[in-house]
Image (cartoon, rainbow, N blue to C red):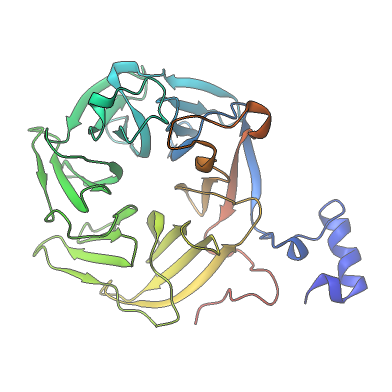
Length: 343
């Protein structure tokens, strides 16, 4: 029921949310502002959640640093700009067992402060101690060629899988030996980005520009997830396995949306989809998310468009503070009239 069509529904909506109707503005009822970082030129990308301290970590592309958000929403610098040689910081994950933060870092152009042309195409995974914020290990991409380590997952056995968007591949990093090797041939994927793994660590899911691919970790066999022709799987920046489903943040072509894809038991087919948010004005440029129980935290607007190819950024008055939103993952009610139920 659209509130603009029914006066009584519109009055109820206005009373409930302080004078406006979310459905009329395209807003998702389950999405709520969680915290604000008063640093408009941060240009964030990655976000990670530490369940032990209920701290959120937000990475910066431009300022090459990581900000920590307390449960009360207070922001502090966790990794200082350029600390331990870190470059632009993208996807991140918390290793709860070892109390560390794993973060993708890369040099993609002059939009990063302190950019040096000689560093272009360098990439690494940094491992930071959650207590001190100091780098414990740095796993670097091999010299030669251009790399863009974008997002990662890791296994209990000490392996990191990281997408390389520039080379079109996935890398496998042995945390014990430090060995960095290609898990897939270069050019095998078209701008791979989001990556996820099931709890049993049998299947690796890799999102690229066209679709989502499932990789059997025992055999190395890769296949595109089978899906309905009506289902859009491509351009997932963030990708997460949650309770037998994949949650994707698709921020390529409009509508920008957050979707929950249910999976078959064999993890080889999409059996349904639930749209958690679509064309929500508060999610004008989301990137990645962080799952905490039955909800997800995500950046509403990374403002990547604010930085030109020459590295110049919009004037400060045109930028907005960084807003972090929270949304339910399994029971978010979609706006009336929109495709939001499993099919």
